[in-house]
Length: 197
Image (cartoon, rainbow, N blue to C red; front, side, top):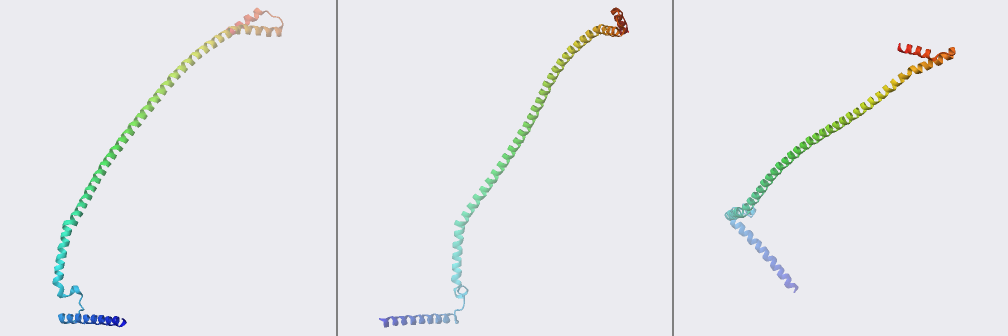
């Protein structure tokens, strides 16, 4: 059995060698030289290469024009529409924001005016209240001053009315202490004469 295996092995090796020799001899017979040329540059296969190139190009052209390019065109159209929509939406939102800012600034200005007006009204009201209270206090003080002055005047008049008596009594006491006994009527007359003038 081992000899059978060796024989079949040898037979295969001989067949491989014969096949190589045949290919080399056919190559030499066709071109007259050994096959050193890169197959795509072999002038013998230019016709079939050009045919396959034309068929491949036509198939690729049909595939691209009927399937790929329409899809790419649709995608680009959708993107362009989306971008235009987004730009339009952004412009609308910008205008809306500008309007909101303008309305806010208007409201803020109105609120400031209103606050200023309210502050002025409050100041005027407080000023009027203070003026009214001041007038009331001044009136009350004027009344009290008039009352006090009338009391002072009456007290002064009353005191001045008693000055003659006090002066005569004091003069009488002094004269009595200094001279001894004197007539009270004489001292009163002398004091009255000095006081009048």
